[in-house]
Image (cartoon, rainbow, N blue to C red; front, top):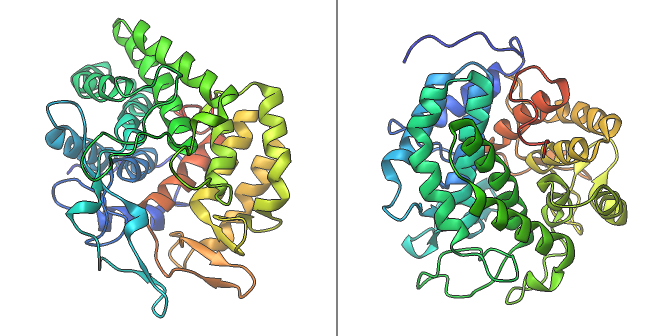
Amino acid sequence: MSARAKSPFGGRFDGARDVILNLQNTDGSIPWFKNGVIDPWNHLEAAMGLNLVGARDAAEHAIAFLRNTQAADGSWFGQLGSAVPIDEELHQFTMQGVEEGHKIRDTNFIAYIATAIWHHHCLHGDTDYTAANWPMVKAAIDFVVALQAPEGDVRWSAPDPQTPEDDALVTGNSSIHKSLICAEKLAAALGEDASAWTMAREKLADALAHKPERYDRTWEPKTLYSMDWYYPVLSGALSPAQAKDRLAARWDDFVIDGFGCRCVADEPWVTVAESAELVMALLAHGDRARAEAHLDWLDQFRDDNGAYWMGMQVEERVFWPVERPAWTSGAVILATDAVQQLTPACNVLVGR
C-alpha cells in the first residue's frame, strides 16, 4: 500500500488508526477483534474512520472486500454480533458458539455500503471511484428496498431459514433511512435515476415517525436499548419537534453526566460507540453545545496509545469488556469530524 496521507486530525487518532489497521485482514475485511466477528456495517464504520485519518488505501481495501464478496442478488452475509458471548471472568469477547447458523443477511448491514461510498465521494471527490462502485451500491440498495413492507418498514433480514420471522427493527430501519439518503445523493452525483429509492425512503420515514406498531412485532420490545432511542433522531426521518421530544423523553434513562450514553438503561455501562453516535444524533438535531460536551467526555476512554476501549462500568470505574473494537474507534473518528468539521465528509452522517 502507498504511504498514508496526512491526517486532518494531526496525530490525535494515530492509536485508533493503528488498532484498526492491525485488525484488518489481508483480504481487506475488518473484524470486531482479531479473528472475530465480521459484519458489513461495523466493517464499514471502521473503514470510514480509516479514510478520515489518511489511510485511504486501507479504506479502499476494505471496500474492495465487500465488492469481491457481494452475492449476485446484492446481499452479504454477516455474523450476528449479539451471538458473540462475553467471557465474564476475562471480560473479553470469545468466538465460542459463533457458528454458521448465526450468519444472517441483515438489511441494515447491506444498505450501509451506500453511506460508505457517499462518504468516500464527499471526502475525495473521486467520481471515477464512485462510478466504479455504483453497481455494488445499486445492487445492495435494490435488494434492501425489495424487502420493504407496504406500510413502509423494511424487513430486518432476508427470509433465510435461520431468520424466518418477518419483522422490522427501529435502529436498523433508522440506519437504512440514512443509507437511502446517501444512495439518492450518489445517484444524483452520477446522473442515475433514484426515484424508486426516494419513494421507498419517504415511506420508511413515515413508518419511523408515525407507525411504531410496525416495529418489534415478533421480538420483545427493546426499550432498554439506547440505540432504539437516539437512532431515529440520527436517521433524519423525524421532524425537529419529534426529535426534540424523543431525546428529552428518555435522556435521564440513558445519559450519565460526565461519561456518556449507556448501552442499556438498567446497567451503569457506558459504551463509546453509542456515545459517539449520540454526539452525531445531537448534531443532526442541531444541538451543537451538548454534542461538543459529550464528545469531550470520550477522551477518558482512550488507552495509553490513544485507541478507544469499548466501554466502562462507571460505578466501578473499570473498562469492560477489555477490548478495543475497530468500529468503536471508527465511530469516534466520525463523530469528531462531524463536530469539528475538518473534512468535506463531515456532514454525511448528520445531514439530511
